[in-house]
Image (cartoon, rainbow, N blue to C red; front, side, top):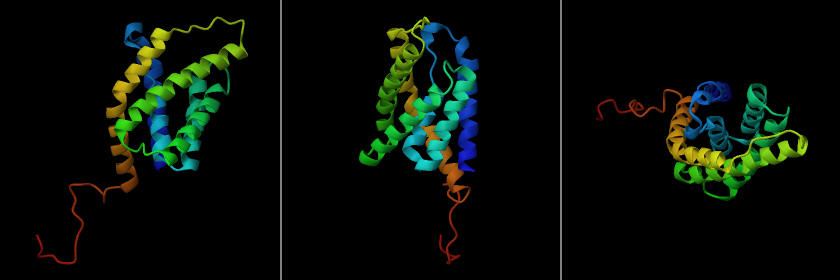
Length: 178
């Protein structure tokens, strides 16, 4: 249930970023919300379900806007396993720590995608602009904290179900106790 829910959330985010965000003016940037979801999944999920979601998100990104078939699944899986290893060694469970992690990993991932794309097709003219990459990195850093709070609440809601809601009190054996 949890994997299916986050798969649908990722598909929705990818659809939004490839349809609505492309209509925004270039000076506003094109934030990669699916990338933020992959970073969240790498920190919060177990290894197998998270790797499966990262692979599926990479395949969906290749279908929507891929340059070379298989580039995004490989990059997303490498990013996932790198962040999974870092989250086991470092304490990065707080959303405040995840924003700089997402920004630096986005900078390195977008640079890696550009380098792989230029190696795979040296005669093609690929557009690279430090201004756009840094702008998108800053946008991701700004929206990362509210996005991670939202994803954490969704994760708790889906994983815990209705029992763990804060407005419902668990029943105790003493019915006269207030």
